[in-house]
Image (cartoon, rainbow over the protein chains, first blue to last red):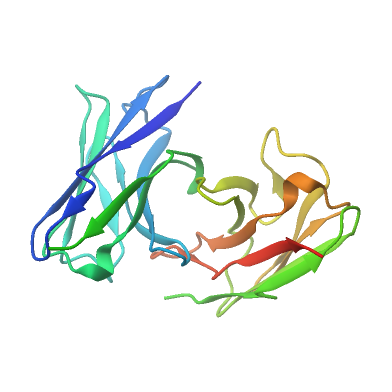
Length: 118
Length: 107
């Protein structure tokens, strides 16, 4: 059974870089069928797609965040990662990772809560 | 970006009711629409994809319809487990975008 687990620092200071990892178990990210993605949800608000990656490295980013985000994959660890630079309070959110099958996010991690505060 | 608008924002209903949620896209997205259910403190769960295809394991009381710019999610007989927030999402064009959600609450 495929499972995804986000891991991250919990608290990040303004202007710093947020780094999150998503560890995939019960399946391989090294698959030609799936993309892997990140989605976030600010407290009490709706969902925002951040970006997606294919294991070979091709990426799609939300233009609203593109200048500040990097998504990468490490097939040796069966992980993919998200970096968000120059964070502000507006980046405070629950960050979810997900598997993407035919452009649909069909398996989600439980989410990692990230707070941006000094 | 394609804007997704859901209505109503909140829906009050009773167990056993038939409920219909609406999602409108700011431009045609063909049938590239998904519906997700989210309960408090949990990750979203995929219910419907390609506007009307039921995800494996999802109860048949859930159904989706529509194409172009107007879509609906129908729950034929509301169950206690169905009280949650529902989001639509288009995946026709990057950036993928979500509606603001419809909260289904107990009447």
